[in-house]
Length: 255
Ligand code: ADP
Image 1 (cartoon, protein in one colour):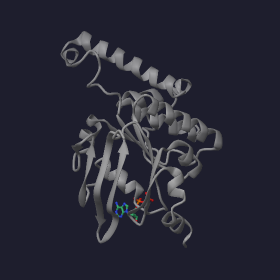
Image 2 (tube, rainbow, N blue to C red):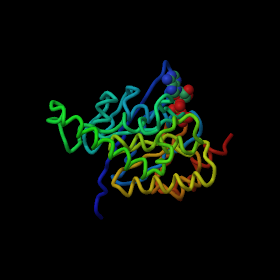
Image 3 (cartoon, rainbow, N blue to C red):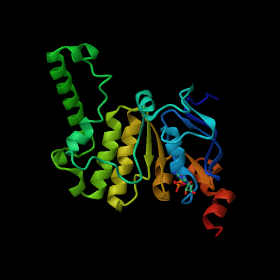
């Protein structure tokens, strides 16, 4: 059998908050190019795990590896440069900026074709701006939000705001995208569109880890699912395997 290349390795991660063990010896792997689900009851540690991976929280113990490189303890800006992007359960868009500017502020300047030379050369700054603007227009179009480019996000339907947040995360050109409950508050049609967007992101070579409560979406979208309960991994496998797991049935139905 050919070994799957691992993009993200979570090794024995623990996280304590003043006596509360929010994550307890959590280990699992995310294969490169996968859509990997993280599910579990409220308070099971899912968002804490994302906060550890993206550098917002420092783990109490254990290690996170990105493509074989230990990244535990790295600052969020460095993790962003290494290719990790995320969205938040509660949208965090710049309310004062247009949709276009929300995307533009997140664009990756380090990999513009114009490169560093242009930063010390006035015409170069203009050229780099033009390149970034083209990139942002491409993202607006790809995520179907061109019509809202000049609007501020607050006035737009919730489903559109969620799409803007994903587009902004993609502006940094990540190789690993962490989505925290992207379907929360979406209607059926919006959930269907979200699934298409996530598949197209994976199709462009980005590994996706998604925290999600909508089990229908998890079942249709994810190749593998890790289930957390009380900060511990209680199941890990294909969606079919985990929903049939007695520990999972117990965690969801066992009072
Ligand atoms: P989930 O995302 O699965 O709903 P969380 O990761 O948000 O779960 O929370 C897991 C546990 O850790 C909960 O008991 C929560 O109250 C606790 N927790 C999360 N963040 C903090 C924090 N910053 N300080 C103290 N406790 C926290």
